[in-house]
Amino acid sequence: MFTNNKGVALISVLLIVLMLSAISVSVGKYYFLSFKRVGYVDFQSNAIQYLGNIETLALKEVKREFELSNEFTAKDNVLFANPLKVEIEKGLLSAELTDASNCFNINALYDHTDKKYLLNERSLNGFIKLLSLLEYEENAIASLTDQILDWIDPDNQPRANGLEDYFYIGPMNTRKQYTSKRFFYDLSEIRNLPASSYFNWNTLKEHVCVFPNLGGYTINLNQLEPKDSILLASILPNLNIDEAESIINQIPNDGFKTARELYNAFPGIDFNKSYLPVSLKTDLLLVRSYVHFDENTASSIILINYKNNKATILSRFYNGI
Image: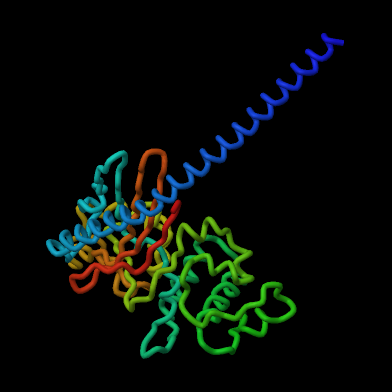
């Protein structure tokens, strides 16, 4: 009888120890998560401040560099060749600048004058040619193009292959919505259009973009790479992809400095008839900023417009904050 009682007591003690251990682990895990959460909240707050600082530095560098030379922007420009880097305690801030004009801006399909949306026929021809070079069917191109135009324009009259509010709020559409009657804010909005299902989303993102319509979106020829040959072919009439790639390969690394240099290099090309205006300088830049602090990382992307000797942030997107 005495032996059995010792066994019961031992088992009871072990159970109590096991329960205390489980409680200790649970409390320790909760405390660790709380501690980590507090640390991450502090990082979030500091990251926004750090990103703001590196963005301010990027704006100053853009203004300083473009004030020195605003006639042309070449590939070997110091802004693009050398990322900005600033060491901080336990971390690093960095920013990479790239030209933002190496894509077809969908918002350029309209001119916005006196608060009216006027169709830009030249840009429209270039967009249609771009989709044709990507080897999509004519019917799919016509549907996507008209649906994009109807999504932006302020009227409710559908184009031949377009759609207006009657469709988007009707029984055939599961997501009830109205057309935006404005320029696109983000490229992902195109996925609201039924015709987008005929197109490869990843392919579209490589060649098409959405930037604010500032009245005069231009393509900087000096910044184009061989991968941009489809874009160049789409904005120049009677030019195929191979010819466009040949032109890009002949662009010097230090860029064409004047229009005369460009015209002399390619006498058979009339750049003044391009579907989208071409230029030798950069007006739009993307700045990708990063904060590395201990084991945490955050980033942001801002769009900068440089005009009239002033660098202005048009949009900002945070990631990891």
